Image (cartoon, rainbow, N blue to C red; front, side, top):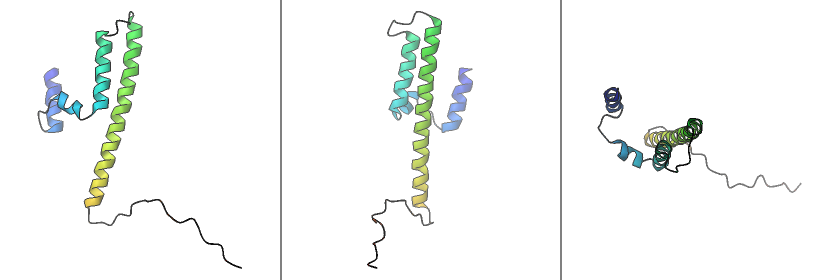
Length: 107
């Protein structure tokens, strides 16, 4: 099963870039992964029951999922902005207006 996952990873990314180098590009996700491994290793020596370990794993996976989606969203936003800036079409950027409103008439 490990070989199947490894093969599909190479197809997605087109290279044999290691997990560690990929995680180094995403420090928040790396920290979450290390937190998950700490739970598995019971690094704090404070988990006595499977139900407590399960709850901590679930919480950590939720946080990791949130971080992953946040990173994905930022990446997509950056890619789309770069594509628009390099395209031939004219793009109007939203900027804060400096106007304080319409001047009152003297009538």
